[in-house]
Image (cartoon, rainbow over all chains, first blue to last red; front, top):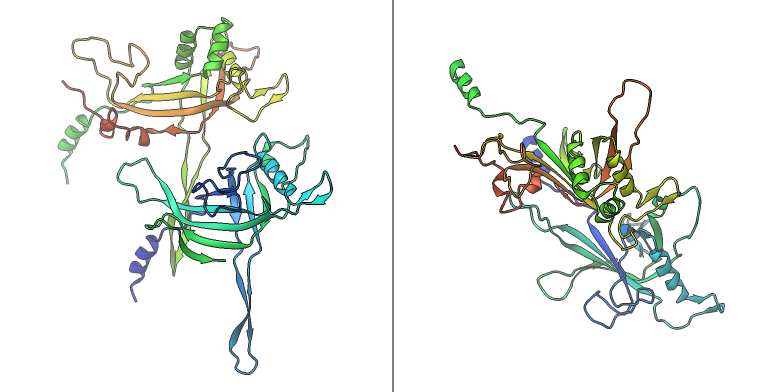
Length: 210
Length: 236
C-alpha cells in the first residue's frame, strides 16, 4: 500500500473517457459493414449505396441488466432473468431541407402505406443498421504537432433497427432553427454487437454483445 | 545572488519590449460582397481593403479555455483536463468610420447574405447564398511583428510593415499571426447620431469563424515560420 503522494501521482495520470468523440452511420440491413461491398441496401431517399450520413449529436444505449433473487433457504443470490435492452436513442441534427425527417418518413413507409392504407409485407428496407464509431485520439501528440487524428476505440453495431416513431414536424412562428438542432428518436434494436474493426486482423474482432 | 550592477546590465541588454501597436488586421471580404460593392462603384477593392485595415481600432483574440474537472483522491482532489474547450469562435473588431460610411456599408452588404432587417430575410445558411453560388465566407488575418522593428541594411526607412505597407507574411518572416478562415459577420453595430462634440463614429463588428490558426499553430507550419518559436534576431 503506497503513500498518499504516490497514489495521487497515479490518479493524476489516469486519462478520462471522452464521450464527445463519436460518429454515427445509418445504412441498410443487408450489410454488416458500410462501404465494404455493393450488396447493401440502396437508400431510397439518398439514392446511393453509401451509408446515410446525418450529423448525430448524441446517442444513448441502455445497458443490459439482470434480475437477481435470494434463495430463501441457502440465502444465496441467483440470477432469475437477463434483461436485453430494446430501445436505443439517437439524436440527430436536422438540416435546411428536412433530410432527417424525410429519411425517417420514407423508412416508415416501408411498414405502412398510408396512401392505400395497407401494411407493406415485403421485408425490404424495414430493418436497418447503424454503426456508432466511438473514437479516441490516436497517440499522444509529439512535440509541437498540430495534426491530431481520431481512430476507432470501439464500434457499436446496432442491428435490426426499427424507428419507434419518426421525428415530429412542427412549425411555430415563435421558434427558430435552434429548436430543430436536436431531434431525439428512439429505435427498437434486435441486437447490439460491440466490435473493433481496425484491429490488426482484417476481420472485425468481436468484443461483446448486448 | 546576483549583484545589482550585473542585473542592471542584464536589464539593459534584455532586448526590446513588445508593443501593442505594431500589428495589422487584413480583412478579405467574400468575393461576392466585394464584387457587389465594386460593381456599384461604392468603393474600389483596394480602397476598401486599405480602409478596413487602417481604420481597425484594435484586436482582441478570441478567448478559449480548457474545461477542468475535479478528481477526488482520499483526502484531497486534483484537477484534470475534461476534453472540452470552452469559448465561442467569435471575435470583435472596432472600426473608425470614414466620412463615406463605406466600411459600414461594406459590413452591411456582407451581413445581407443572411440577415436583412428591412425585408425580414433571416437565412440559416452562410454559404452559397448568392445567385452565382458564391460563398459569403471571408478571411481575416492579424499579423503582429514579433521582433524589434529595424532598418534593413542599406535601405533606410524601409522596415517592412512599418513604413511601407501592411505587414506581409511573404516579406516578413518574424510574425505573431492569427489566421481566421470561413469568417462571416455575425453582428454589426450601427452608428449613433447625437448633437454634441462631433466625435468620430465608432462601430463594432462581431465576426464568427470556423477554422483558424492562432500563433500556437501558426508557428508550427513549416518551413517559413518554423523559426518563429524563437524569432530570428536581426543581423547587424
